[in-house]
Every structure is written in C-alpha cells, then in structure tokens.
Length: 172
Length: 172
Image (cartoon, rainbow over all chains, first blue to last red; front, top):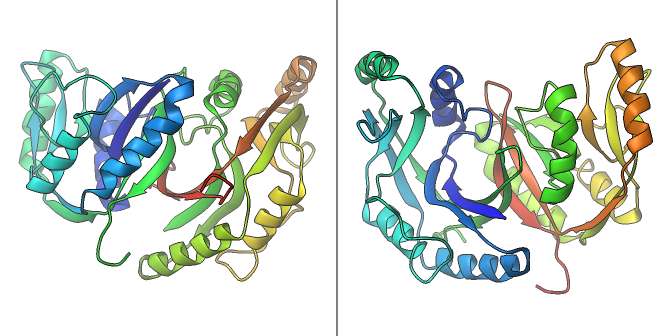
C-alpha cells in the first residue's frame, strides 16, 4: 500500500488554496490542500503496524511548527506547478529530515521546498498566464501546525487519512 | 465550522465502494468512503479545543468494533440512496449514542442505520435499475475498526481530517 505524510493547514488557507485548485489542479478531487512532508512510499500490509509505531516515535521528537505562506511561486522549468511557498524553518526541516532517515521510502530526489500546491499540469502558456495573475494577488498567511497525518492511497488515486500524530507541545 | 465524525474502512472496502461511487455518487469527490457516526454539526472556532477534548473523553469509553458489511440496501422511499448495510452491534450503537448525548449538534432525525453510501441522488428509474444490479452482486466484508476521525468541511463541500481517535484496545 502507498502511504504519505502531510500537514493539513487550517480551513482558512485550505479554502483559499481550493479556490485556485478547483480550476487549475487536476488533483483537486484526490486530496484536500496540504503540505507534503513525505512523498508516497510503499509499505507491505504486514509492516503497517511497525511503520506506524516507528512514525509515532519520530513525531514525538518534534514540536509544533509555524506554517508561514509568503508568496506564490513555481517549480518551472522542472514542472508547471504553482504553489504557496512555505518559509522553511528549523522545525519543518528537521521533521522532514527525520521522516527520511532510517524510515521507509526513498530519499527525496530534490532538496525540500515546503509548499502547498495550488495549480499543476498546465500548458506552458497557461502556466505563464496564471503565474502572472496569482503572483500579483500573492499570499500572506501564518498559523501553527500541531499535528500531521499519515495517509494511504486508494486505487482511484484519492487519499484517506489513516492516523493523526500530534506534535508534542506545551499543552499536552 | 462544520464538523463530522466518521470511520474510514480499510482500503479494500473503500476501493469496492469507490468503484460504484465513481459512477453513482455525486459526493464522490468530497470525501472517501466512510461510515458516518455523527452527521455534520456546527462548532464555533473558539469552542473547537473544548469539543475535541470532550470527544477524546467520549471515545476513551469505547472499544474497537466489528464492521460487517452484509448487503446492498436502499433508503428509498426516503431518498434514492444505496449503501452497504453495516450490521449494527452493541459497540457501534453505544458509540453512536454517546456521540449524541451531552455532546455538540442535534439529535439524529432518524433511527441510526450504520452504512457506507455507494450511490445517491439518482432518479427513481436509475435507482431501481442500479439497486437491482448491485443487490445481486451484494457484499460480504468484515473488519475491525480501531480508530475514528473528526473531520471539518471546507467551503467547497469537501472534508478534511482534523484528528484521529483510537478506540482503546488490548494492544495499547
């Protein structure tokens, strides 16, 4: 089964992201707006319990983090993907690193750019056009993320939450 | 904000449900296949933390339950909705009852019929046709549910998981 780890931002940011995704992201139907912390990784049915325990141990070592979306950016020329750039900070980077060290799945192919995707799989001209528009509108949203989610993928490509892990904070 | 409480069945049952939902359920895109334990209820932003604590306390009093999907049934003539009937058992019924006693939201309008929706909002003739087909195919699937999810609804109608609650079992 294919699993992934994400943070879902608050309703407010998700609603803004969806207002774009609805039109510009063919994955709109498959998952609500999210910041990926670990891309899809394969786990055998028999190993799921172990993996979840392992993940719980990893998450325990981390704290809630600030998610600060500061601008609209693009992965072009790599892919025609637009996203809300999330400012990297030590908490996000160390959580991402820990999820790729002595844990399931492959090492990331590219250096980690925390983001929430708002548009993808556009033609070059559409990408240029929409990027121009959305860059002007921009984004500035900050919130605290105190939980992350483990998801698995269904055969139709959609993602279901398997479990939620709290990032241990002061109020627990 | 609108919240709801559901159980997500295993990938296996969700895949079967989606093979029907894809064609016959206009809510297909809004949420993955689920068994509703508590319908949408409104909670003020300021009350969310209290509500979640309250919910955690309720869940602690309950045990993992058997989800046994035994046949395809319909809510007709009330609505043209087809579903996998989940056999009610004392664990499911007491969890449902507890989620509607001294907790947020309204009392249920109808007596509780545990189910996973696979088709809805069809015309009378389509409903009769599809029900005839799916009743023949039937379903027989049993699994243990050891966690439930608290979701909130986005402006576009889709649902995001806010938190996951484990039903306390022997292995914890």
